[in-house]
Every structure is written in C-alpha cells, then in structure tokens.
Image 1 (cartoon, rainbow, N blue to C red):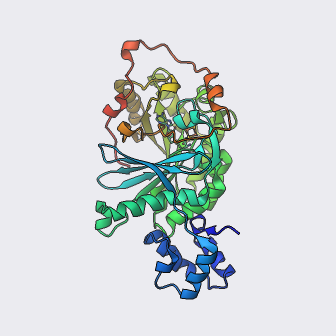
Image 2: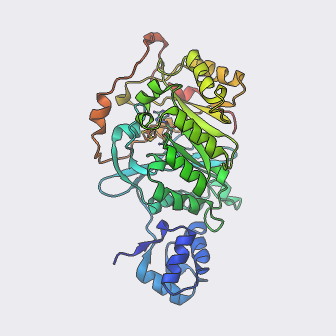
Length: 396
Ligand code: SAH
Ligand code: SF4
C-alpha cells in the first residue's frame, strides 16, 4: 500500500483520515498546523502529538514536497521555481513581492488543454492535472523556504505569502476536484489562513464550473476576457466556442451574488492590432456594462502581452494600452495596467512554459489556426521585451 500524501487533504479530509486510524477527529487541526503553519514534514518532530499517533502516521502516511528542478531570481525580487511533477513534466510557480503584499502565482495543471493563441502554456499542450497535494505543495514550499530565509514579512511574525492567484500554468476550473480542497487548505485558519478576497481563481471561462465554485468556495474571481465579441474570442480563446460570451457574463453575474468581492476582475491581454483599438474598448463597454441582461460590476486588468517566439503576436504599444484604459476609465470602470514582473526570468503572465509532455498535439493545432490580425505598420510595433517599460498599476 502506498502511503497517503497528507498534502492531498483539506482539514475535513485529514479529520476523516484520523478517524480511520482510530483517532479523534480534532487531532487533525493540530496535525494541520504542524504541516502548514510550521512547515514540518517529519512526524517524529511533531512534539505535542501523541507518540502512538506519530507512530501510526509514520507507517501509513507521508508528506511529499515537490522536488525543485530550478530556482531563478529576477532583479525585481520575483522568484520563479520549476517543480518536478513526474513523467518528465515540470510546472512553474512565481513569487511576486510588493511593498504591501507578496503574491504567489500557482499552477494547476502540467500544461493546459485550452490552447489560447497568446499563451506559452497553451502552446506547450497538456499532460495532466496536478493533484491537490501538488497544488498545495507549491504554496507550502514558497511559504516555508522563504520564511527560513528570513523574508521580511515572516520576520515580523506574519506569513510570507499574503495572496495566492491561480494564474500559473493550467486552467484551474478544468481541474476542479483537485482545486477545491487546495483552496480550502489555503483558506483554513489552521492552514494558511488567507481570506477569500486574497485567493483568486482565474479562468478562461468554464461556465458551469464558475457556478460550482460560487456554491462551494467563492473566492475572488478573475475571468480572462481578451475580446469584446465572440468572433474574435473564438479565435483567441478556443473555449469560447463552447461557452460564448453571453453565457460567460451571465455566470459572472451569478457569481457576484455570493462573491467575497463585489466585482469580477476581467483580464484583457493587449495584442497589437488584434484587440486593442478604441472601437474595441467601446464594444467591450457595451458588452459588460450597457446590456441590461449582463450588466456586471467589474474591474479591468489590462495585461501587456508578454511575447514568446512561437506566438507570432506583438505587444500593443504603450500609448494604445493607455488609450484603451482611458476609454474604460472614462466610463467609470476601474482599470489597471498590469506591471510586468520577473520578465528577465520569463516569469511574467503567460510566459510560464515549464516542461510538458504534450498529449494533445497543441503545436500543430495552434500552427494551423489563423488570427485576423489588422495590419499595423512595423514602426508602430513594440519590440519583444518592451512590456517591462509599462509600470503603471493602480492598487486593487
Ligand atoms: N488558465 C487561466 C489562468 C492561467 S493564465 C486563465 O486563462 O485565466 C493567467 C493569465 O495570464 C490569464 O489572464 C491569461 O490570459 C494571461 N496570459 C496568458 N498568456 C499571456 C501572455 N503571453 N501575455 C500576457 N498575459 C497572458
Ligand atoms: Fe490555458 Fe489560461 Fe493559457 Fe488559455 S491563457 S492556454 S486557459 S493557461
């Protein structure tokens, strides 16, 4: 029998596991704190847990951290880890320190099956879903390794990681059964104690799963929109053909009925000559705000496209991004332009590639797809790497 990996269990699951061992359920809280708050993986070192239970755990359970393949440091303080997730696959996790918070960008899958045209993970194809333990272990690793290194927040007796965003590799809502217990570990007072507002699930638009998340564990929701109409979104985010915008926006409205924040964050990757014109900004306004059927409390986060060679796409010039933002702001919608972090170590949004043993022939599929790219004079184009120059970001 293989030993159960306790990183796979939320507090309820651990309670049930303790009961199976003939122990009282409440022991789970103590155990959970040792694992997630104190970062201990050796049962023998859990000194206030009865010796008999420690003995049983050593026989039937384990705590399996992720093996680090590499760790890279950006000049701006961002750290990117590449973790081995088996069978020749590796996923990336990014630590992004800021003045008033420290965010961890966590992966949910080895690769991604959605295949968005502008995303490096999508181009890698898909291998497999991560387990709950593999999702949780990314946070466990970052929190406890950085704490041991004396990262400032921890020195003040606080957690190192203040926010988690499920914006690493993969579509989290296509791995829902592993995601849900992982979110519960993050939120648990005996675990990482993060508030629902500080844990964000980002989705390309899995409509039914947005409803399930609302019912099971309504954390902050970010939706990757990227286009103001179905014709363009079909091309950029293939999932749109199955779940078109009208359905998606209605799901966002339903989500807000129980959401911890009173808005949905719409992410919009700015692609030169593709989705970045002032007309498209107005069309976007009509989509999210002016239609009575879908009027949605929202914020926009414009993400300068982070280029990678196979995409064939370019980042919108800075002035076009700012003009687009202005149209939305003038209509009263809070709009931020995301600051690019960790671009010197390819840790920015959409650059996470990891190592994926693709089982979906993504490269061929993406190569055959055509995007209606408006001709933009070459002189107006921004060279690769330029998004780093865009450093404006309003606070949430
Ligand atoms: N699969 C989820 C979460 C992971 S992607 C989703 O799509 O929402 C996290 C964010 O990065 C998404 O908003 C995604 O659209 C954006 N993104 C992907 N590739 C990008 C790129 N090359 N440049 C900028 N943003 C990108
Ligand atoms: Fe997958 Fe998100 Fe990348 Fe699209 S943007 S391919 S959904 S990870």
